[in-house]
Image (cartoon, rainbow, N blue to C red; front, side, top):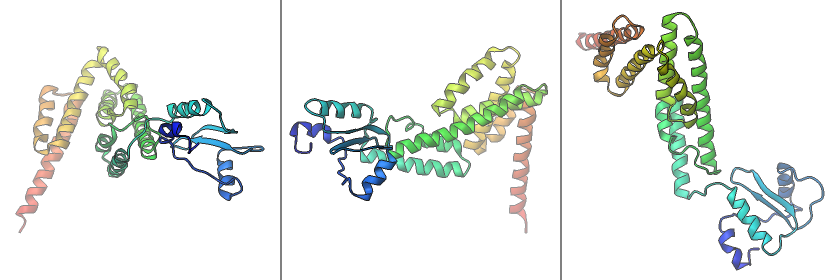
Length: 260
């Protein structure tokens, strides 16, 4: 196979490995791939980057059978990525996992959002997809809890649930799976006359929270805008609480600097 020049373009896309069937390595591989029964030589196995078995069989395919087999395996092998791309993916995943561990899920998702579902089965690509799934599962748990609150009769609980949906969309919405599931739910709330004003208030407060996180100097003005726009509402109550917290923090900071 290696000596056939006509196969060179196809073989260049594989990593050929020869294993002595009498060696311990072959026994380990046979168990890993569930190769039962008698194995005749030559025995050809094609593995994808994630270890998935694409082909396994005894005998040497003849004529056009071998290139056809290699092309079929390539079609199921996923998108090939160069070393630089794989290195960038590894670095992005490492940074994202660190941010998530520190409680910064939105920033973590920003790191990997353009790398999700790359179509590759290389280790970094698979790891990114698995990490994205973990974050999506976390978002689903939040949505499930929010739905329970929305189902309650207490207006404050209903508002808290809607606010949680808005926050989840803002933080996790760049994950395709989360957006696909949550966007229709929010559209449904917007279409319901009873829920539309609650959603509008929740979105306004969530924007204020996001502004406070990005631009702390504008936090007070953002919360005050919610209070002025929706006086006496659950959104205004929570915005006032945030505003009072900011005032207390400012007073404490000032006192600390004025202490003798």
